Image 1 (cartoon, rainbow, N blue to C red):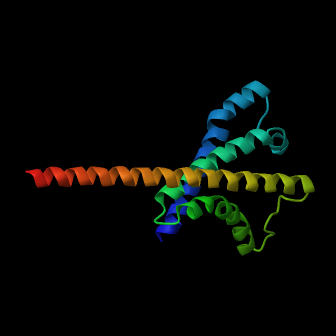
Image 2: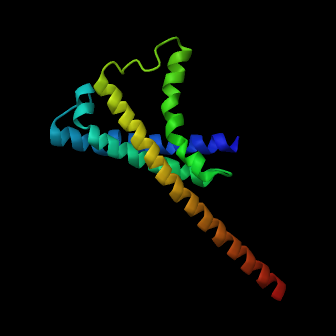
Image 3: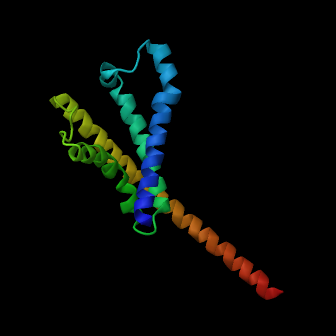
Length: 155
């Protein structure tokens, strides 16, 4: 259960980061600077920017999942992106729809594959950082406990 919780926490961090950047911080800037409103044509125009934001979001999501995981930190952090990309197709199949209803052209499929690839790579890099951060924090906590034990034995 802790594994599922760590992956879910990583997905929430990734989604919150992506939504905050794309629709929170960047939305007024993009609409003022480029005089565009969110639409399907905007996705194609700003796909490179969206890929970078998606990569950053899944980097932090993979880091959070790897840090929170009980074990196999790299696996849990990397699984954030594939699990997040499987949620929508599973829900669509449960409701009797096509798994990917919006992917009706080669360009859309390639764009979706690019998003998945960037997300998986970023989550893996973030998971490596989360694993390193967890090991460092565990080492520091052991040193603090050891020094407290030494201080208690001296008294």
